[in-house]
Length: 256
Length: 280
Image (cartoon, rainbow over all chains, first blue to last red; front, side, top):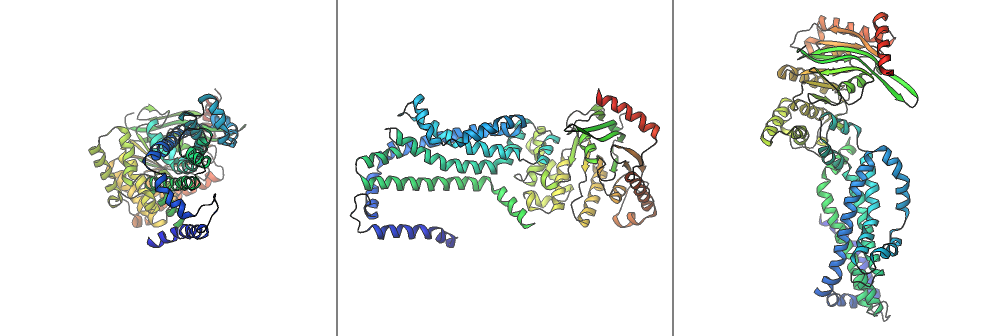
């Protein structure tokens, strides 16, 4: 366990140390020494910016992500369960997925305005939707026929079949989509804030850059990176608990 | 009438395969009385699985009727449980053994203590008390099939359908599971329709063996197995009566493979009537 932790931390430690050493004597205005950035961190991210920049960003990310999760899974189950619906939807889905979500920001802003939270939540939700939706469709579609027959022959009701068979059975694929969506969501959270003059983590980075507060700008970027790591760690924790059966099943299949 | 558990009449199934119809089952008629253990054998591709899926209400037939306890089967009926061949794929891998056995009972609306008692009893009956909290994929193939049998038994069906349940387990496990089915059948008084391609298994297990023709399937012969109720892998299988029944069934299956069909008069008449139903 400690060995694994050391291996995992090895490269980050080396990279940070390299940055620290190489930037130590830097006099460049745009590349301040890492020591200066670290020193700026506690004074930059005090209670006030956390309340006004970090928390709103996280709230929008959470809202957009949850909307995408609910809509994506619901639509994915519907499309994945019905062959006709799938044949109708698939070309459209492929097209919509191919549109880069950031390009939607100006469009959505036309309707919902640049400054409010709505544009940002909608942008995040639209971006997160596709990986979740497409993976759910695939997960539901590839559900074992024998499991479906079993559910039918034991007369499991629609709700039980949905919850206990369809959703549980496709949960590994849903989780794979949700993991992709999480990184898309963080990216869109920042991008959606770059456009508006509203507060938020992305807005803060732009604000610092425009105010020539370069070390502060760098702290914002580092904070975003740390946030991404923390969110993916949280995701893996949830996944680890809910998909324990899937890991066991895969391992058992490998041993045969 | 009331002694008949399962009544299959003129069952027919034609698969619609993109403009080319495949007639899998032409005309199957048989009855299974309450408490009977009947085996179905036939050459490979004889439509055994089609028959079972139609009887289970998982597949719509093209003609004929299936009655369970006098009620026509149009979808999966409440009084029927199915044990599938693919045990690994019919158990829910995200549920424990207990969860798998208990899920249909929960759906029936039984309360928690009743459920727990039935699950425990069923697991005890198949000898799996110790594995109740394991997941199916932690168990061997034979044990997984025991879980599937426990789930079927706990459901307390009026007819238990088994679709080549032991086709993919090793010979020793297979013998154990065969005895388990005999024991459960005797102890619980459940009616069993057991589909298999193994002639020895059919004779060893069944009171009657229905031999199917090749496709399109009809019942070639209904063979009564004259063996004592108490059966034993060693003695029963080496007894002259077993050999006689086995030879009889073997001969019939060989004839079925060569395309032999029952008396043309009966088949012709039935085929015609089925043809009309399928078209109409």
